[in-house]
Image 1 (tube, helix red, strand yellow):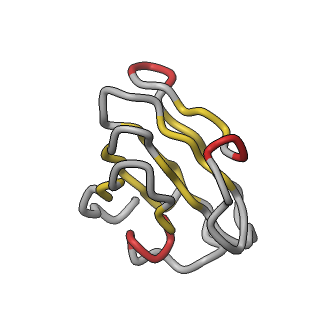
Image 2 (cartoon, helix red, strand yellow; image 1 turned 90 degrees about the vertical axis):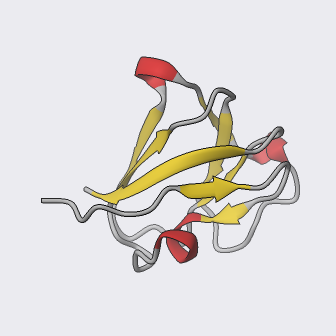
Length: 90
């Protein structure tokens, strides 16, 4: 069973390290749920991307989640207007 975690707040236009912000070890398989009203952008990278054009959009509603496999080097999220995500071990 996944551990319940606090939501991660994404500041407006700032890439956020989801592993660090959620307390989940880097490389762990996770599910990310977009709980906000705006699309977020996600990137698998060791460092924050230079712009949002490097991210993959994750929309809201039924399509508002992404599963990340284990052994990834880093996981970043950004929202142009600010947002909220839930990150859980999967």
